[in-house]
Image (cartoon, rainbow, N blue to C red; front, side, top):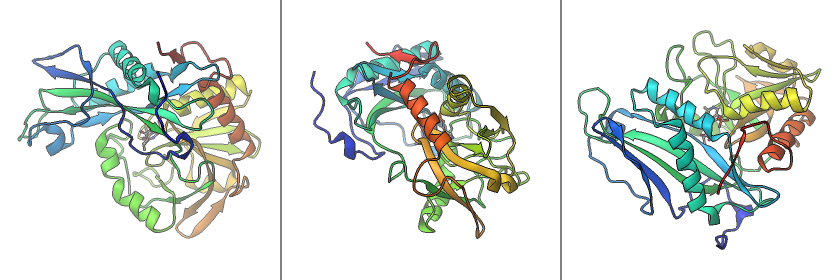
Length: 341
Ligand code: PLP
Ligand code: COI
């Protein structure tokens, strides 16, 4: 097998067609075995549940080439479980956790030539997703579904790699108190599109959402959770049941405590506390850890002491340790790394 002729170091976060994708169909109350296919296009009914009522959810995880040349995935069982939670909330059939992990393994193995080499700065992003595929015109769940996983090699999510980002406190909301903010529903992203374009048009990299009930607490951004470092080196992350339970953030809290001996705190974080933190970062599969240099709250600039040129020192340690585990440079906690093949 030969790696594809791709300029790995130049990749952004975009779609590149790879050779194989996995597809399974749910019909008559059960999933079929699923298979790898080569066709990247989907033909569905014009009245499919996904097209009319956005009945769809998705996941995101990555495959990495380790220092010793193995291909691995990071905690795919947690993506499977989170997708099961999304499906329950959206009245979709759960794709079994073990079958999800097996399908991930199959897609990565079949597209091994697209897994970027160690040290290239790129990774293979995997996108599991499910949607209602049969016709529904009354507002109700579909009875037929497709579960799919495709793969695409990606570089950094934010242009400029590790250059600190500028965020703005958002006036629009992504999640309602008893809504769907805690699951990975496509609809959460559709409603963020207006706001992300507006943020970019106004010179911001992302929106920092606040709780929609009181507008007092920090939640997350459109595609990542948030971590803060206090001036005395504690790692703080917002606690809220309207944000996505990020696998990266949950892993980082363990890394901070067990690998770096840092104190960690998951608690409500007030907007008016922002200027007390030393460092800030966005964390997620796509974002990894992207440093935040500045937050603008309706004209008031909160610049973190870590500055606008480099990642803060504690953020950097977290980044190095997490990516060290993912790339096989550091021993991983039991069950975190799934070797492919
Ligand atoms: N929050 C949102 C809204 C996201 O879309 C993502 C990306 O998956 C995350 C947080 C980070 O989650 P994870 O670390 O599991 O990728
Ligand atoms: C991910 O990090 O996997 C996501 O789904 C975030 C998305 C905005 C690309």
